Picture 1 (cartoon, helix red, strand yellow):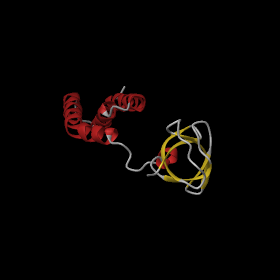
Picture 2 (cartoon, helix red, strand yellow; picture 1 turned 120 degrees about the vertical axis):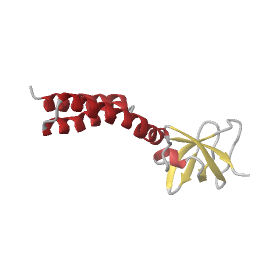
Picture 3 (tube, helix red, strand yellow; picture 1 turned 180 degrees about the horizontal axis):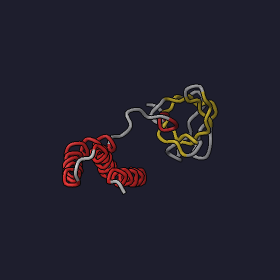
Length: 143
């Protein structure tokens, strides 16, 4: 078997393993194997192929992995979905108690409960959305 095929198979296996682990390490090793497959396809000897694999692996793990890890660990810049509603103001359309009620959040009507179960918030009040539980907004009156 030609050595470039071996390196290509190794690159594919490492790339597939990266999809399951999301560590960035196996992906960088797969990229090093892909680079080595190109070197092997040119026809360079096995010693040079190993040197290319080792050097590209080490340089990728030392230089690129910390950057990739930093990007993986960063929180999303913008909230979306129901998490974007937390902190928004809402208008009470039907009295909100610790059990039920209705509020209008950004043009949509939501079922609501008071965040503090002892509160009764009258219709027409402005509240802040503290949390979303399923399809129910937990709200607290504005001061």
